[in-house]
Length: 82
Image (cartoon, rainbow, N blue to C red; front, side, top):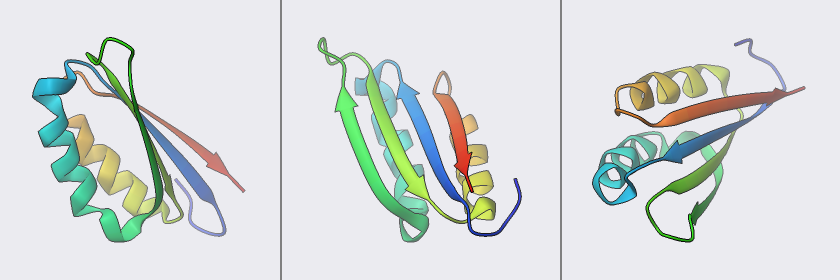
């Protein structure tokens, strides 16, 4: 990802929320200083969760997503806006 005046949306789908949420939260907390906004929503059956993060530093997005890749089964999508 390039640097500059970009805004990034990082979307996470967390399956098996009861078991994976603590590990995901640990990673998110680690990058708390780089996260501008956060929105989270559980599925209606509370088994899955969707988390949306707003960030502005490409390098921090890269580090965050690399750490989240280590959490099994978490789906990660990133969108960059100029």
